[in-house]
Figure 1 (cartoon, rainbow, N blue to C red):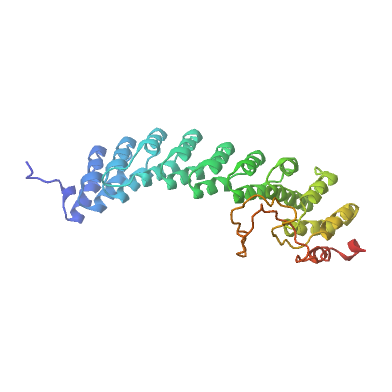
Figure 2 (figure 1 turned 90 degrees about the horizontal axis):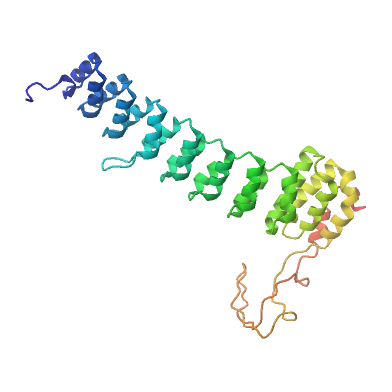
Length: 336
């Protein structure tokens, strides 16, 4: 009892390694992987293992993270990988998420990968699962609902399906995500629908800009010019002018005949644009209502006013030359 310690348990690493080299019994090799004093002996034992169940035991129970990772990397049985990916949880000695991450990397079943992507509690595991996902509807759902920004972004970046991108553009809570989805859209019918029905003016303008860009890049005959220009004129204002103007001018250079026929309306809209200078309009507001202080970006406050706020263009102090600056950017013959 205890008089004859196996050579693989020796603290002499060379002796332990020689013993492992001679071993062929996989049950004993698994024991070495879990119990040997020598780290190199444990790794060598793992490298000789082929039995999937024994490798799973080592992956779950070895103290060393290096040994656990070496074991999980040798597992190919999908059933075992699924079990580890779904059920292997942290214990007193180590965090299990690293092993789950490697297991997910080796999974092939998209339904299981989707389950992990939606349900694992660890961000890195969910990100790895998203890397493996191909189902566009599930990616769209994760892009909209995951609680972590990085996971949502990774799922969004994998979206290519136009219907799913439209779903994100219409339903994401974050306006930046909605704009990013618009940038990936190229289907004119979907973009027209958003430009027509969207309540958020910034998203409508974004869809219109994208429509112009798609038209300029491909001269897409699926976009009716009258429809395109209807949205352009509708969304063209001081706040959207800089965004829209780049593509309108590109249209002027690429297809001058087309824009020339619509230019009077564009010109009228641009000519009326001037700098926005909000203020309290005491002439048209309700003088009887006490309003809480309203603070603008420049520090100005309406706290001394006893009426509701009515913000509008202050033409007395606004930059009335703004529209002329925009018109000057067009090819000369447009302004003849």
